[in-house]
Length: 83
Image (cartoon, rainbow, N blue to C red):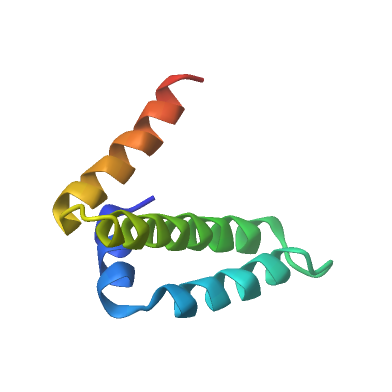
């Protein structure tokens, strides 16, 4: 997860574009010929796209972009700390 990447995706992509890209990446990961490194790269991209989608939802609900990005980062870090 990289907040600058999530910010860039949020600012330059519609939720519909992000959803379409997410669908393609998820399908790519299911191909038999995809190696572990490729799955890891796609997984990182999927995480960033999901973050951008969550930021879109938060902003739509009235949150300021900066706060929405920080809230997503804290949520992810909080879930990592629980393990």
